[in-house]
Image (cartoon, rainbow, N blue to C red):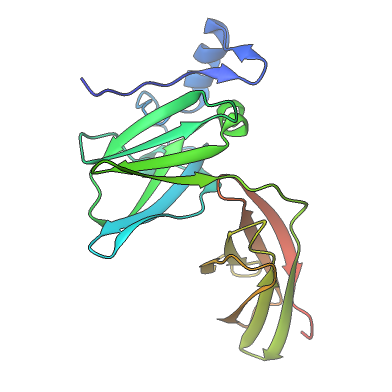
Amino acid sequence: MLAVAMLVATLSGPATPALVAQLHQACPATPIDTSVTAERRCAAIEVSGHVDATGVALDPAFTVLAAPSLFARPVPGRALLAGFTADGRELFEFPFQPNGAFTLVLPLVPQLAAALTSLTLTVDGGTYRRIATLHDAPSAEAISTDENHVVFAWNAQEFPGVRIVGDRSGEAIATFQGDETYQQVVIRTSERRFIVSFSDGIHSIDRTVTVFGR
């Protein structure tokens, strides 16, 4: 049996059996819950990184809505992803077998996601950690340099990861990481507005950003 444990709890205390039953009827409650297969969009976290010859990395995570068919399943492997609360309580463990770059979409109900403040990735005896940053409300600048290019800037110390989606097309444009207070990137797009997911390392906040000059 896989050594997987999940604490089903809310910020105010343990979940009641009635609440757990209700969560199971709607969506998977935890990363190891495989009981729900209906094609609906459910609360989840998306965790990515890589384990390869260049080293190990745990990228900023994003909170998403995803169909259960996209959820990763725990398997015995050399890597273990774990989530913790601010006071050190373990919320979940998720074993998997990394093979280079990886992306794990894991179901996690909002009650547990709100309590999650750090992720650890343990591989071959080494542990790598990602902690939610302290931050204000996200903000960004998007300035058109020509009809096909935009300079995008944000505070990457507060939000180390951003994911940019076209407001008109709904298509993913790019995902970036950074660590500077004024992080700049150039993106190729003719969009006039973006939906940007700002990741604090563990959770993400969506905002609409209008491109100046278009």
